[in-house]
Length: 138
Length: 114
Length: 99
Image 1 (cartoon, rainbow over the protein chains, first blue to last red):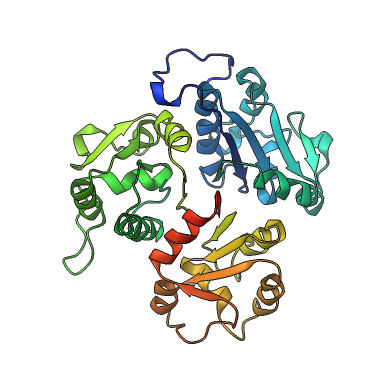
Image 2: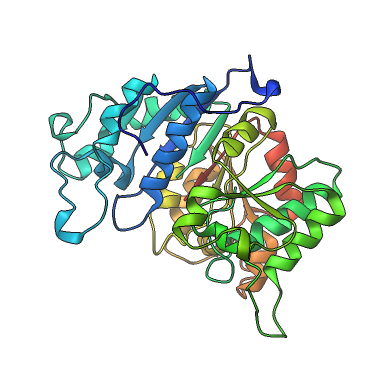
């Protein structure tokens, strides 16, 4: 996973996908570090950027912990991938939706998140989910 | 998309039954993509007890009968020691782009995981 | 949208979160350990019955039978086989797994 951003070269895209733009949403509901799901979901997100799709990320339930500021994984000797969320902008992935109810239930506020996001109600988030073509629960 | 390993979790079993039912109804399966611990569905070293289902071979057989494209994520595979040397017949190793491409080309993408 | 839930409501919050986000007219299918949510007399019954007025709820028969819960499914929950699961995925433009 690169944190450089903006790199779209090196992908051998097949002809059939060119021109098709679908709305992809990755729904992140799991906390980082305890399991690998958050990290490997982020790797899919980065690859999806190369396909020029309309990509959004939703963070709800324990998924909001992925965006917590100040994560220091040195004591547990695992990779800290949280800075990568800040690199998403460089991949033209700018739709990061965070559910307000999930933040509040965990005592978190928007300013405690590592990256600018759009905080919205569960109802609004549900509406966005309905608008998608492909929803990948992570 | 299958995100859990065989035997530990029902995801691969459910996905298999879903795939079989879809094929029986005349649907086409664009691809089966193995990710996270799901890559372990593709190791040829798998030897379940005689009286249990052989999840790896079962996928390979379904693929052979219906021309399915069984793709194992290279990055997730490398992490877990799943490489060409221990890859079961019927599977191939490729990049995550294959998953995104399926999402674009197929009418439906169903995720089976934990 | 078809929502797919595979977790027991007594261990994880997937079903509660799914029902909180399933819009009117969508469908929910309970598979694997989530079928325990569809069993009569459980603490999850009230939540599921409340949802039944708003969304269609299905449960995967093979998973119910495997867990010894046959014949104990809450009224209003439709039991389907794998073919029915496929039909639901086909009928709905999108689906989402609440993992």
